[in-house]
Image 1 (cartoon, rainbow, N blue to C red):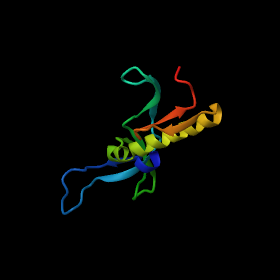
Image 2 (image 1 turned 90 degrees about the vertical axis):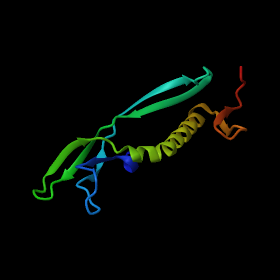
Image 3 (image 1 turned 90 degrees about the horizontal axis):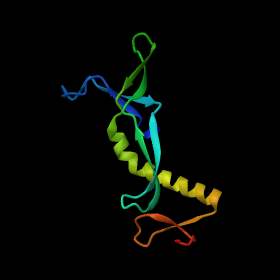
Image 4 (image 1 turned 30 degrees about the vertical axis):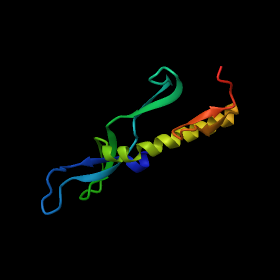
Length: 126
């Protein structure tokens, strides 16, 4: 996610004059993420899942064009990239979790009949 969406906007991104603004997009590094496990759905049914929140600050390293010196600043994460990629990252995380459970616990998964999710099969509901 950081590779695809880890950008900040620095400078002024207001109204363009002659098609240009003083703002620029800068590649950031070092997402700060908080993740926590949830064990039930909103209906209180068993549903293991993880929520992850990305802090809206990212370190940006720029090279000063005049002095050539490295300049480190912290800017807000450009949220558009997060929005565009969040669903894909969620699906990827689910597949990685599935593969790890299959490897370590020997469980199997299949897509539910409604096609909206995957679930563990071969374990008695009780």
